[in-house]
Length: 498
Image (cartoon, rainbow, N blue to C red; front, side, top):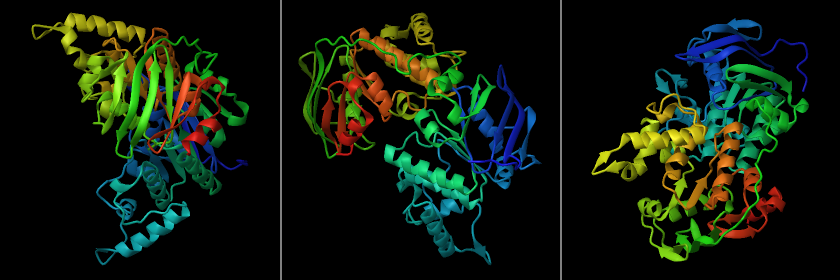
């Protein structure tokens, strides 16, 4: 790609932003050219989201200016950003579930004549626009009926309908299957070829090297560097993001497997989980791989008692256990770090202290009275050991980064002194530095004799962290890879595709 001598499509110059007690951005410069994908990287808390919100008009900068094709842009609210041709697709989509695909596309920009909305014309244009993106969706379909990938396409279609010249995508593949993610990257390449400038935010480094032309790295609210992606090695990119060298992306350990701890036999629930059987040993990290919808999460939920199984049995340390609800699993020493920590793992508007103490009230109480000093002492222990970055444990969990929210969920289960930990997508939406810390904890738990089931959509994570891998397809165990360290992504995908 050449950018020639044309003016940059976008310049953000000297951007400053502070919040009470925190300087979020310090003299940030960013430049985007037409027909370019610029990767914006950094750990959680580096300032990426703040910078995006300033560009989108959701926040006002304290200092600095925004220039679009050489002309200063006065962006003080989201409408101003749209008028400048800037569209942002956030992780949480801005769609109204009860409205149709066409109605969402034209919301606020309805085609009308004599006071009447021209619904037939809207649906015709919607169909043409979606076909341009290679997507087959009936414009009359309600958005609540769309898959995550289809909602992503709907958001891109809205941006094109607004004639967006600058498209910002925040973690666009976080909830997509590998084929869906590859399809999205193909569409992004097509948008780039049309001259649209794209700012791409992702923690998945494989995607960055596959799609980006240049990369800008932020750390602690400061600009670290901007380089062509062809000039940056993966290890150097990680070092730029975390501010230190990580010799290995996945910390190594010597597996010392003990006795069988968890035995699952012929687990069934409708067509989602069918005849699933496996054994998990003390000190083992067992990977559970497969495409989204293959039955991985459903299997973990059945073991934890979050869903009721149709048939099958579970044994712990050689003895049958009867799990009808999560409380039974927790009492037996089995805990789950759920796939969606925001909806299922934490009550975000409550404090870190409250979230930590909720499942541990019995341990911290005597005669029905909470012994808060004991709770504080144990929470302080985990804040230190897990390096949870929290200014005050009485602050809402909502204010924490994704990695620190995950650590709070882990801390409360470690207080239970559990035997079996079910990790479902433990590093989804977590920056590379926090990922490494979570990996280290997974290894230390395995070294301490805990039995760990690790579910992940990221194949490098499965291959790098697990001792053994089970691969699911359409609710069944499609195959087993006995030595994960010698396996390849192609082997896993071959089994996952059936």
